[in-house]
View 1 (spheres, one colour):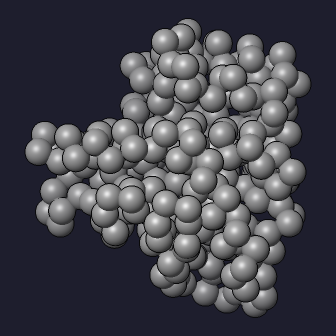
View 2: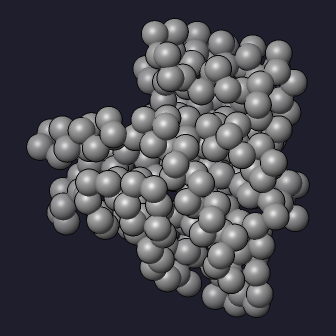
View 3: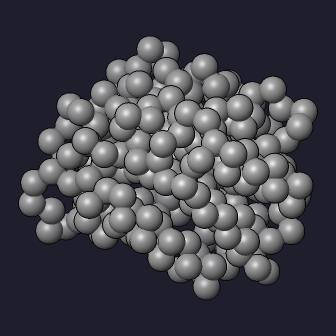
Amino acid sequence: MSRALDIQAADGTIDAHIFTPDDADGALPAVVLFTDIGGLRPCYHDKAQTIADDGYAVLMPNIYYRDQAGPVVPEGKSFRDSDVRPTLFEYAGHLTPDAQARDFEALIGAIDAEAEFDGAKIGVVGYCMTGAFALRMAARHAERVVAAAGFHSARLAAEDDEHSPLGLVDMIKARVFLGHADGDELMPPEQIGRLDAALAKAGVAFTTELFAGAGHGFTAFDAPVYDEAADARHYKRLSTLFEETLR
């Protein structure tokens, strides 16, 4: 079950959706789900509902609200199409760490205001480029975010990225799970090792798992690299993480 929600933020109105189980009775633990670079689309509505059906209220914002409300990828097109990707990269370029920080404030405000959420503890999950969003939100709101996860995340610890979340890990108090795609050029072994070392040094409780044989985007059923078995495992890992931190 889902409903649309407009959230007033510093930079405009975030069009978002709240997902709950069909049999929801009262407020539920809060989860924020950030889509991958393709933005809002059926694949992520399904993902949010699947997580919600485990007993959570899931808030899924349109990360591109500054540029366009609703889905960005036209019907019948793919976020991987050459005539769509330039728009996505342009919009993604507007999502600076400072812009994200302003959005985090608005999202937490919505969690505190809407009846579906018991927001004392918050879980957050991101995919592809938004794996970094999840880590940043956990760092900037360590008093609220108790669980953060990223799957087939991109460029979490690139040496040439001054905005990498690598520099914020010592602020994280949440439990962290990172599920990496095997052989992912956007998150190669050296970046995985660099991030793991930083998380360990900071004393963060974290788990890193390599999804062997799974490509970048393995949880997205509208992607050619979709891996059904790896996707099912990703839901199991999220279920365990949220059960042990949000309940």
